[in-house]
Image (cartoon, rainbow, N blue to C red; front, side, top):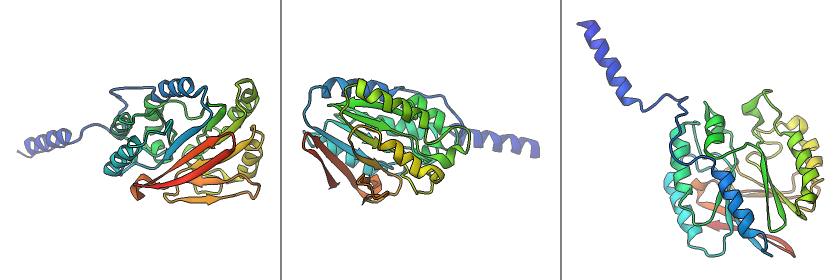
Length: 264
């Protein structure tokens, strides 16, 4: 009788668990970033002005993300959207799929970076399947957007974070790619709990080698902040988390750039 009840208990538990936390059986669209980067580069090639929305840390705020998407879609001036990381809270496949499908409702193309919560469990690998590379770059209207994995704490010493080889390559390629200005995007900024702060000043020296670096933008801190971290004229903008019902819009043109804080 006890054996029979144990079998029933196991069957009940199996029925209640949708999948193992390390499940990687991804359903739906994959390689989202590559497809949207191709669209951004094509549509923005001849533009003289860009308007870029930056959202971040939507991992547990599904209703608020839906509202943010509706708010962005209500505007007719956004060229593309950057998500600065943490679409997942526990690195589960289901989280990535749900938020990917929600972001697909944006009328403008969106790009996602990896956040520290995205790295939990097998999230790092699910992220790469669903969205793409951990470090990547693209050019829009002559501006090179360098998008970096800065979640060093989650990677220990498995691989270099930040990846200086990638930065070196991008510094060499920027002039050949027609980029005259640069923007650096990341999830965790220097001197945060996730960043490899042993190399923070070296990292900044690398960034200053990019042509006309306008600003850096990141998430992770969940509240708006505007700080010249290294006192060298390069401002780091931290966007609100989606849960705080805020995001940033950057207008970039020949005169420079402006940052607008949006509440929805």
